[in-house]
Image (cartoon, rainbow, N blue to C red; front, side, top):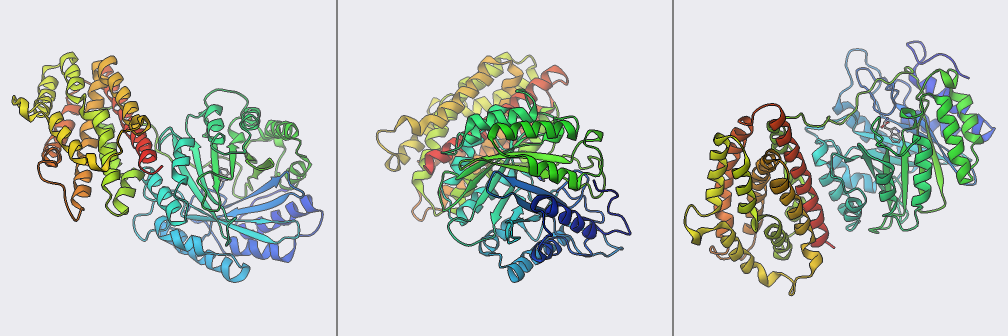
Length: 592
Ligand code: TRP
């Protein structure tokens, strides 16, 4: 058992290095090779100090963590660390510091240990932007050592550097640049609950050249269940969903919603393939076990069910634990099961170098409050145009086939039934003030008393103009996203309380504006644009939506507080999620 912590007299570096030496002896029964310690020195330099920087690597803000990979011929010891600038008692560590330090550490790993930075360099501008970076970290590095101490490296990057809603776009673009064009669709199918429930928090790259170098994407399943984890495993050809279920069940201790702390899944892609090679399913066992003694019991049981020896975990714990296992929780931070190939277990051991308490705040914002104007603000701030499908359309050369497939689905899900749905809400709300604002939108939609100006018919003309770019006949699966989104809207507008329909209508206006303006720009990119009468619906909407958005805010404010407001917020959130899922589906149709 170890004692004491890093302190003024004892640097983090010295403390961690000592731990690594003890861990090495415990696992390999020999002294840590020189090279292992040199790598540690590069990851956590002698003078590195996290002054004012709450590292997210560990619960107590220690900027490093050990882990073991078990189930192979020999256990692998690994170190994860956050690059930090050298000690300067006057300045606090900032995002700019850790970004610069991250780049410098990458360079050191290349120069001194032969790490390959080609893929890191190819995406660094996405994840280490000069301006506006936010979130709990910029870049971390991990080294894993074989039994001889020879290292391999990984870089972890933060897809939420521009905020959580930009994460899908960054991950999709990264996969593209690295030569994995089909991988994004797999991720969405595996983690379909949308960006705030299946939250993308990390990506990692093997800093190695060649076909076998992995690109990994980590999703955290907020309010998730074992079912969500099993579904991710289902996306990997040789994964073992039943092992994932039993392993995660044993560690979390049940089948309910894992709301104490989100479990996570990692999909590892290699060789440009759309299907992942492996999946790792992680349980933050410290949040469920009560104390480390119980966490250890659960882990040992789960490992023995897999036929993987747990003796190394026992020795590692003995070498690192600063206290009795039943005297606290958090030393065994996470346990993960990797399947897709022969099963491996990952165990993450907190160094508790700075303390033995949970100090970091959760990085993700909580659910929107129960007020529709908050949801509206959120949607203004996190626009639907951040969706990877729209980002890809913008990035790729102009392509009318893609736009036509998208608009065909918009017709199926929205324009075909929009007036009917909105009219239902108009009829059912109790406040005439709200009805007045809604009916103005409805009236615009219906051509202001001129049946030849029905927007639906103008939209039909638009679609007819796009026919040459559409498949004929149109296969059912092409319309599946539109069908699904239509069902959600029918339910929200027509079967729920009128205030849920109202909330949905508000978000339709916000997203509608963002979407129409976006689509307008895309159609105008054509070197040979479609004729004006085909584009009339679009031109009209670009103008109208702008007006309606301000009305949406006014409307939201006029909903009475309390029950009606809560219902409207609920409808708004559900519609926003469904719109996102609609574009997820359209992505698969456009880029099969
Ligand atoms: N400390 C962070 C967390 O608990 C990040 C982290 C460190 C992590 N090691 C991990 C996440 C292992 C998942 C698995 O979320």
